Amino acid sequence: MEGIEVVVAHSERATLRVGDVFLKVDVDQTRTDVEVEAMAMVPIPTPEVLWRKPPVLALAALPGTALGRLGEPSTASSAAWAAAGAAARLLHDAPLPPWPGRSLDEIASRLDGECAWLVTNGVLPADLVTRNRRVAEAALRPWTPVFMHGDLQVSHVFVDGDEITGVIDWSEAAQGDALFDLAILTLGHEEHLGDVVAGYGTHVDLDVIRAWWSLRSLLAVRWLVEHGFDPSLPGCEFDVLRARM
Image 1 (cartoon, rainbow, N blue to C red):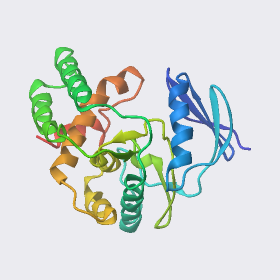
Image 2 (image 1 turned 180 degrees about the vertical axis):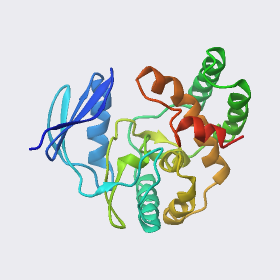
Image 3 (image 1 turned 135 degrees about the horizontal axis):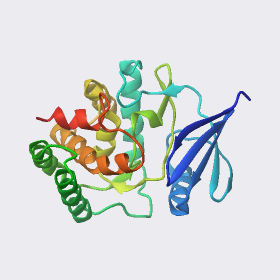
Image 4 (image 1 turned 90 degrees about the horizontal axis):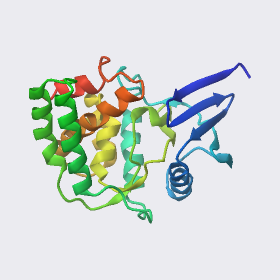
């Protein structure tokens, strides 16, 4: 063992890598319960659960590397991105988890609150927030629930060549909108949206995916700032919002 790598750490949770083992520490055991149950249910590869002693969950490392990182160009092939889309389709076609996700009214209410906070605190220009709030409206429509990963960031999808070796971080899994997952997967990587949709294999409304880019970015900024992350870095949430202007 060469040492301990801190993968992510903030006041709510921390993930450490020790050799080929990831140790996840979460103050909210409900999230860990969801993660373990979801991984046991889904039809796509996930990390092996080695042991669990609350508040710690030990997972085996997945082979391969992350499909990409937010704010960095992805070196993965178009075929790998398409494979990620195909994996998302497998997940969305699976039987629903027994627990619900956030309701449309809950999402809309939170969006209003976050937009007001962004403007009141001068975090982003009012016209930028207003424009993206208008774009986000397209996502606020009824959807047929699917088994949604809920945080399908590009860094949570692992590939080896053109093959998906697994998907990590299932604590936000729930019933939800399929297009939310596709939007989170392609957030900041708009150039790969066509590959993902091709792999997904059915028609999707691209305007709704773009709406989720705006909505998710507006919702994320305050949490990121308060937990020590920088949404103003190149290619990250501020740039995603500016791209809609």
